[in-house]
Length: 234
Ligand code: NAD
Image 1 (cartoon, protein in one colour):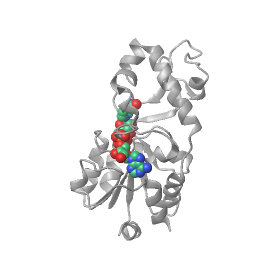
Image 2: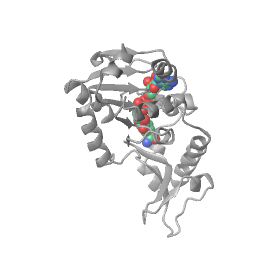
Image 3: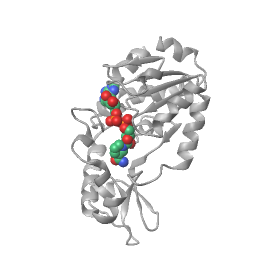
């Protein structure tokens, strides 16, 4: 059914969450068994509060995440999405992920709602560096300012240009596919509803049920995204 919908659609938009990257070895946030935040309280560490008041803990937490990210790579599912974009089967990807894997796999029209952990930048002068600065425990800019990952922290607003672009894409969609998101975090979980209100078919491919399942035209649970995408790609 989904395979036919993909072929018939003129404007397919994909929204990805942390579940897109677990098959690359990166833990997600809320899975009951292995989620990142089942061990840590995000609002205490991945936050402006920690950056300002507990910077050593902040550096250590993000250094550890950067090291993990730099050892991981996009998987076949990311590659299939990039291939589908080139073939005109999908128009854009809205992602909550900060791993940069969609671009690394070759997708071009990627909207990163939460920024990227591939880069760090100076709090003071704004200069950007690759994340290897953090890997090498270099946390200070040449101007003397503090380097921070270029991600959206708890306590910060999402980038307005990304939000606007994501809303525009969602309005244009006639097929909207969610891959690996618990759809618990706003405003990302509003985009499928915008698409649905504008007449799109709405599909959720996620290991566990989500709060928006009742609005979806098709829900696929208990299946790995990589497997589902490979099957659709045949
Ligand atoms: P999530 O962890 O809430 O949900 C991931 C979902 O993916 C889960 O429901 C899980 O069942 C599913 N899943 C996992 N592996 C899968 C697989 N192989 N195949 C199919 N499904 C799979 O992630 P989310 O929805 O992206 O969370 C929302 C966002 O909140 C995150 O992306 C993150 O950006 C943000 N967040 C950020 C921070 C931070 O550090 N700033 C902290 C917490 C949350």
